[in-house]
Image (cartoon, rainbow, N blue to C red; front, side):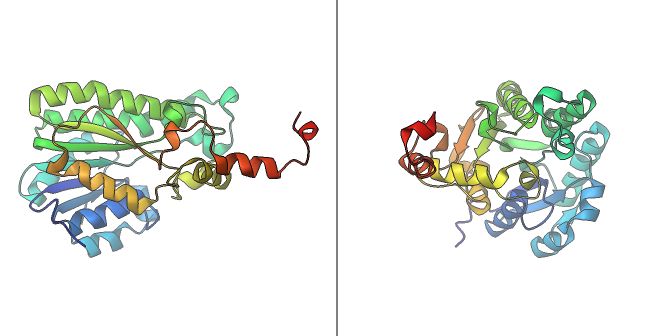
Length: 279
């Protein structure tokens, strides 16, 4: 059911790779809610994924761009304004990648060149997107920029590795740039701290299935899935949230406020027969 929350709005969606991507769900729902969009990803991701199918479904143009390359971003915003016939109203940054995770380097044995890549792709790219958009005055007043984060920015999560550092940096950029962008252009900037979600990128984290199971047991409402995350993104793109900015908004079924839940404790107790076994 459509509520026309984005009727007449235009936006750019970064990061849709395939049907598992949160960005894919956001793109579909944005169009359903009345928006016109441009899709973008790196050239290699476009070749590897199925974004062309999404573009056809959403009647959207795909503009390749490396979000770590300021020149690519300038060209992306310039061409997007030409394609869409004016400035955009919303941007989704759904980008993350860690070579250390992919290569199996533990957090106490990081490859620092890989760490630089993690931070550049997963966090600094967000600053570059915002800087390019502001320089080109590419976002309308009361526009909205959203990036996807995770609770590992605030607390230690087993094997989340250097992506936790990247998410902490991502959220800091939202606050720092959000102040400037809001003050000067009335553009709001937020991050969504999403439940662990089955995506191509997320599935690369060691023990991801166990993490999802634990989070599900800890969260009173259960994990939020990709479609539910898309629903939340749409509200942040809409005029219903015009005064929400510089926030990290937890969309995790209550996980971030929990210490221990009955379901998680019950599962733990089933693993032991006596208290002596727990020592």
